[in-house]
Length: 282
Image (cartoon, rainbow, N blue to C red; front, side):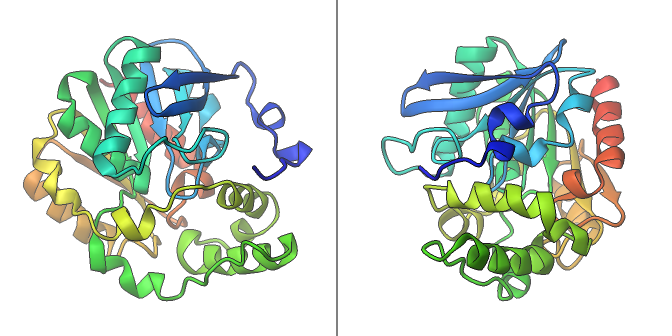
C-alpha cells in the first residue's frame, strides 16, 4: 500500500470528536471513522475515494447524527475484497456494516458511485434505511460520456508530480467547478485516494448499471442533490431530477450553485445546511 504522508494520515485529518476504527466483515476488514451523537448516519464515498470525500461535512453532520464514514472494501485503508465485487455486493456490504456495527436502522448518504450503492442498498434492504441522501448519484450510462471523454489516464507508475498534473486536469474537467479546488489540499486528498484504490468500478459498474432499476423500489424518505455546474450531471441536474421524480415521487431535490460534482467539498457550508435541515425534519 502507498505510504501515507503525515499531513494526510487519518489522525491528522480527523475532526475533533471523531475516531478511527476497523471491523472484520465477511469479505475483508473495513476501515471507518465515527463521531457525533444521535440517530446513526452511514456515509458512502464515491469512486476512487475514501471517507475523506466528506472531510468538510463530518463536523456539521455530527451535530445531529452519530456519523459513520466508510472506506469501502478495495479503497483507502480498507482491505481489498476477498472476491470480485459487483454493485449488489457493495450494497450488501453497507447493510452488513449497518447490522454488525450500527445495530439498528440508519440514515444513509452516498456520493456519486456511493450514491448508486446507497440507492441499491435502500431498495434491497428497505427495513434498514430511514432517510436517504443521494449526492450526484451515478448510474446514468452514456449520458456522462461527453464529459468523461476529457478524462486522461492517470500514470500510476509515474512520479507524484506527473500523477498530480493529470489528476488536476481531470478534476478541472469533470470533478470540480472552481479552479482552486483542483490544486493544493483538495488535489493532495484526491491524489492520495486514487493511488490507494485497488478495485475498478467506474467502467464496470457506474457507466453500465442503470440507477432506474432500483429507484422505484426505494421506500425511504429521500433527498437528491447536485452541484448546479456538475459536468457529470448532463444535460442538467433539473432534467435528471424530473426523471427521478417520475419514478420516486417522495423524493426532494436540491441544487447548489458554484459547485461541480464534488459539491459537498466545494460548497460545504450550503451543503451542510441543506442536509442537516433535511435530517432534522425527519
